[in-house]
Amino acid sequence: MDYEKLRKELVEKLIKAGTLKSKEIIDAFLSIPREEFCLPAYKDKAYIDVPLPIGWGQTISQPTTVAIMTEALKPKEDSRILEVGTGSGYQAAILAFIAKNGFVYTIERIPQLAKFAERNLRKVGIKNVKVFIGDGSLGLKEYAPFDRIIVTCCCPKIPPPLLEQLAKGGIMVLPVGDHPMYQRMTVIEKRDEGDLRMYEIGFFSFVPLIGIYGFKSDSF
Ligand code: SAH
Figure: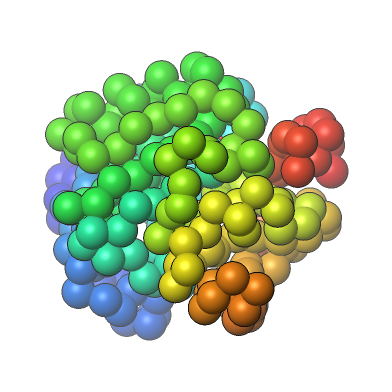
């Protein structure tokens, strides 16, 4: 399989659709091999624009979704980023590639997936990411504040610890809602303490955030 050719074709499609816009995000999509974050049985589908199973009932997000969330997050070269929901590690790799002089802290509740992600990140040579095991709905207080926070599982409500751990001038992107098929992708800009700008950028479907400030179990 000529993965590089397939990768370029997918990126061109996402640019034409208006989903990928920023040069640094396009570079990241061209540089990070999505096939390395897929289970062996799904590698040949890595450049079809769909989510794919990664085990334990979870999925690697659809490339269109990763593109939309990354564009909304506006990561910078020196951003300190928190990701909740490491999964395969693909979104973390895209962010770490852009935040070359920054760092990505990513947290996953399923230990086997945290290991899977660590392996995948090592394979592609991404070093500025650390994978944590735990309940990401609590954030990572000891490393806060974060310039950017991205949640790649669906939140019933905005988890208060994440809002607290967002730096002044920071941006958070997260799907919010309690319908299993449709959640509102929400962007929050913290202009100052207590001065938030919030807007929504469409409907998406995610696996649930399970935790103290999330859902209580896998079923919505
Ligand atoms: N960003 C991932 C997509 C992962 S799917 C990727 O690029 O592949 C969402 C992930 O969130 C799942 O792996 C799920 O186990 C995880 N998750 C759910 N609730 C969580 C919580 N409270 N803390 C951390 N991870 C959580």
